Image (cartoon, rainbow, N blue to C red; front, side):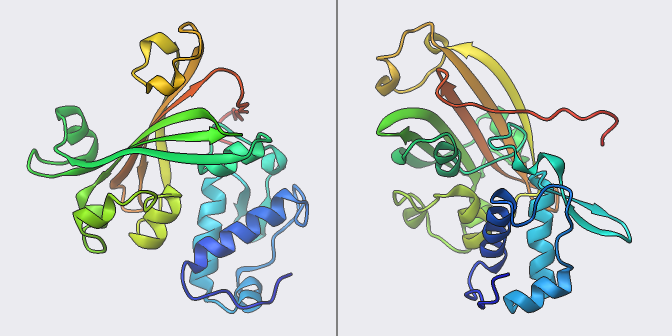
Length: 253
């Protein structure tokens, strides 16, 4: 176990990254217990609340399960990569599929919400949203097109409107929300559909693909622990270069 003290910024996210790697590489195999919170807090020189926050994220990712009065255990499914029911930052997702990840930000601007966005984010017509249009690359080729929306209230205490549109500031988006805005995502509500390229309004950089290329479209909104919607991600995954797995449980187990 790593006993090196973690830097004082982004403690929970750094510990989360370490624990995810240890689960993935078999340091903690499926169905084995994780060390107790107080032991991990001592090992990492942090508070139990920080460990508990990392555990909350691991549980939301489907990597652990908590058994009341028994302990915290690695789930059987923890060694399955690219689960569709987990939100993973795209560079990690692309790397897990065996490609060199890349990123290109196409456009960032403040917009007034459409009636649909105002309803989704519980905003008024006077509120503003940050809209980010971007492409993720695999071995230099475009592989994912994504549009993000973030309400102005999420970041306005930490960034001006001019600062927040700087290229790359919001990436990786989970780190931006948690570390720079103090808004951890507790869960996502997603809709998933199949389409074809010619029906999707995506950049011309993808037009070298056949117009009948299948596209997986994922539209999801992330909520914080206060049940407030803090981010929308609309993703377009053309072709079959990316592989996903989905775990479907019975009776909520």
